[in-house]
Image (cartoon, rainbow, N blue to C red; front, side):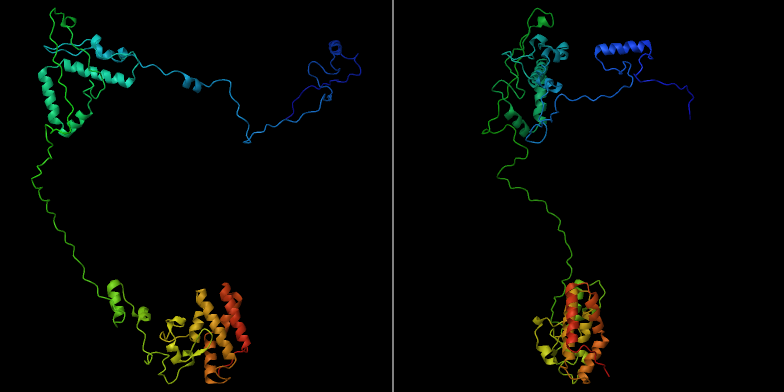
Length: 449
């Protein structure tokens, strides 16, 4: 959006001073006389920018060395208001006359035969006998003590005796004994800490206007502190003679908990061990004898129930057992090998040591890397011995039966796949070693006829 306006020109050149207005020429003449450069107008017109040469080279700022790396603390000259308040003297406690104005203004009514205490005779004052200022706690104790003594002075002897009897009957003797031990009656003061040497007797002319004097009130008898060696006046209620026997404790009702029947004892050599074990620890769970078959007692070596018993006239190639070095274990030697050799397991023949080729083929596909390592190492050594013809030449019954077990278990395919894709480093090394042993033994798969 354009705004309409008039156009004008300003001549800022100083070549022709005669063309300048009279007022402008007079200002320039004054500037020359004052020593200002020509061309710099007094009303702020734009002029030439002139650079002045410095009189001396600039100096670099000086850095203060502080051990902490921070600027040093600068003390303030002005005292803060908080410091002034702390330095001011503490406020003086208010006088006793102001604090006790309500007490002395309205005295308690007097009883017949008793004297009244005026404000001038009150033991409450603003200072002690030596003139030293007392604290607020001391003044408060004096005020309370003065009120108590004024109330006692206005009470009759019968009222004092009645109140005392009520206190003695209402409080336990042990509590009274503790209160009397805490009192400091010999020094002329009780638990309030107020001096008791003040005369409270006044004439009745000051209070009742009569001319005759009223006799002094009898002083309150002091209670002497009890002697721990003397017998108390009131024995405690729970005190019983030493000769009396204590009553028997109340009979507690007998609580009977039924005891469950004792579980049967476990004998591992018993033929019913698994059944007894289930009845003792898992009576509510369903039983599955097949899952506990591995815990059954081992069959005898001469029993025909074992698939690797020496009593069998012939054994299939899938039942032949080998050790970790790939050597064939005869049935009688497999039964004599101790379990410390690590060749016993819960397989088809748990009483016999060694592994068959189908068992090693299953271990080669185990999810546990240690089992795969044992299977790869044993299979590689068996393939090496089988390729060298250690158990018969090509075409023999044992050799062809073992190659048939290798083909049915896909042993070579599993070893080659593990050598290429196995992620576990140790298992992959044993798989590569097994393939290398197979190639050293011939590297060919004999065809089973």
